Image (tube, rainbow, N blue to C red):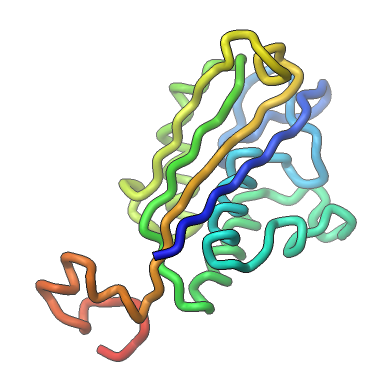
Length: 180
């Protein structure tokens, strides 16, 4: 098993759309960044890359590359998922938290989890998205920015036989290593 942790923060600014977890949220400000500045997805990508010891999103998608200007972070997440698949990793789960004083995010969290799960070909039950405030403290509490944290657990496809489904159905039910 491999555990990864990710963190991202972006400044709130006028004239930008607010995108979190691939969902556009109505708000008077958006996040400043080279891509769509989706802090939630960026934290998830860094957690996944970190768990696999594959660097970070800045290494894979540098903000100096015009190819990533304004790009959807969900599209970048799909690329990270493909990289993990190539390396033989299975994503067990993702747990993420958005830290923002405003806007209220509860109505959007289920769709964020679905978007992340779909991008990574996961069952949505393997993705948790939470949101919290900082009770008016710090840069997120004052509304200057939004941050996000994520943690993930990966296993190697070759070791996936420990899954309950594998124990019951044998190697043929595994999408992993192909030994089936």
